[in-house]
Amino acid sequence: MIVSFGTYDAVKHPRVGIIVDGLRERGLEVRELNRPLGFSTAERVRMLKQPWRLPAFAWRLLTCWIALARDARALRRAGIVPEAVLVGYMGHFDVLLARRLFRRSTIVLDHLIFAGDTAQDRGAEGLRVRLLRGLDHRALAAADIVLVDTVEHLEMLPDRSKGVHVPVGARAEWFDARPATDAPADGPLSLVFFGLFTPLQGAPTIAEALRRAHQAGAEFTATIVGTGQDYDAARAAAGDLHGVTWLDWVDAHELPALVARHDVCLGVFGTSGKARRVVPNKVYEGAAAGCAIITGDTAPQRAAFGDAALYAAPGDAAALADVIAELAGSRDRVTAARAAAAAAAESFRAVDVVAPLVDRLATRGGSA
Image 1 (cartoon, rainbow, N blue to C red):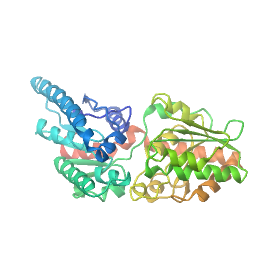
Image 2: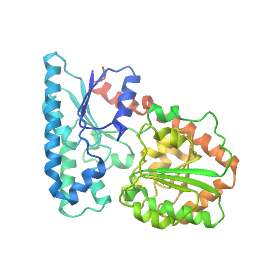
Image 3: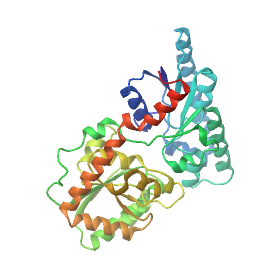
Image 4: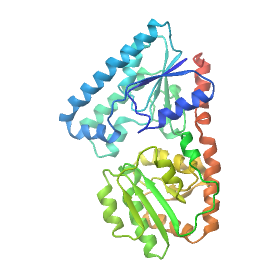
C-alpha cells in the first residue's frame, strides 16, 4: 500500500493527483493523508519578499502537521505500514515530517520545482535564494526516491541515483473535454493561454506576438486567463486588441472545457534558465484537450512533443507572431496540428507517466 502524504492541493496543483490516479489505474492501493495548506506557489514566493508573512505560514503548517501526525498514528494503530509514502508537490517541508513518521517506508518526494530556482526566477536573490537552496538540499536528502519532470531537472539533483523522470502529464478531465473532431470551428483561429504570469511563462512575449500578428493581418481571437507578476506588462504589450478576452480567473473544474473550445493552446516563452528546463502543465493539458500547441523552442519541450507541437524561440515575439499567422491562414494546418498534439498526448495519460515510478518501487520492493 502507498500513502500519498502532505499539505498539497491537488486542485490547484494537479501533479500529485496525476501520480495518484496513475498508481491506482495500475492496480496499486493508494491512501491519501492530505491536509491542504492553502497557500499557492505565488503566495509562498511572496513570503520570501515579505518575511513578516512567515509566521502565518508557520502556524498554518504546524496545524496541518498536527493533523497529519494524528492521521499517521491512526494508520499505525490499525497495523498498517505503507511500503511507500509519496510526498506531494511543494513538499519541501512535508518530506521532513514524512521521514520521521514513516521510518520503515520508502519516502518518495515529488520534487517538481526547486525552491531556490523558482524564487530566483521570480526575482528573489542573495540570502533568500541561498536559504531556499539549503531547503532543497535537506528535502532531497530526506527522500529515498525523487521524482522530477524533465531530464534537465534530473541533472540538477545532488544524487542522481535517487532520481526518476516522471513527466507531468494530464488528468482524465482534460482528455474527456476533447472535442469529437480535430477540425477547427467556423470563424477565425482561436487561441488560449492560462497561467500565473510568472517570468518563465513569458506572457509579455505572448501579448506582443498577438499584437504583431494582428498588425500583419492575421485573423484570430484569444482568451488570456490568469493574473500575476507579469500581468501588467502583458496588458501593456497587447494594447487595445480587438478579439482578445482577459479573464482574471476560471474555476479549475471549468478550465478543461474552456481550453477545449479553442484551436490553439499557448505554452511558455520565458528566457530564464528555469524556463528552459520545464515542460509546463498547460502544454500537456492543452494537447489532451485537443488543442494544437505552440510553445517555446526548448530542449525538454521538443523531447516531450517532437514534431507534434509548433515552436517559437523563447522571448521572440516576432517568431511567435509568424507561427500564429501561419495557422490563422490555413484551416488544414490547424486540423493537422490539433491531431498531432492529441496523438502525442495519449502517451501522457496518468497510467503511462507513472510507469518509471512503478518500476523503481518494484525494484525497492515497495510496489504492492
